[in-house]
Length: 212
Image (cartoon, rainbow, N blue to C red):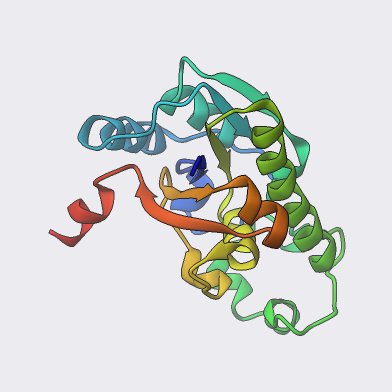
């Protein structure tokens, strides 16, 4: 049986991450010095897959992560791989937001409220689900057996929760900066069920290192 592989990887650290700020697609931050150093360390200590093609969010932090981790791969920028826009909550300290009743209401998964300037939650879910389907279908159509995708934590969690086995809640698929998941699928399984299988952590060996 022929398997296709796609590696979903979260971008590296930004200063906003270090400062504990709520950063979505409304804030286009570059990698910080610590973020670049961390990616270089991960690359030196562990193994990233050797891929010919990298799908990438248009955000600067994602593109810079791709340049560090996959300097020789073809880079394809896809707008729908961007993180959710958090509107009025963008770039605000999380310690401040947790005291905001409107933020607490918005964080409720059943809430239909939408803060000023923010992307609609359902629109984000639909956008990222469709994007994963397009990535896999591109691989199948072009016979691209292995590729990577550099995107954002929220995007990865939504994709994994809706189209990947074993089944977990979105928050259980949270991943560290520069890390992610290796997925595999065969054409029949994907066309029939739109389901892939998570079979490893990226970079390879990272989980073993974290458990030491």
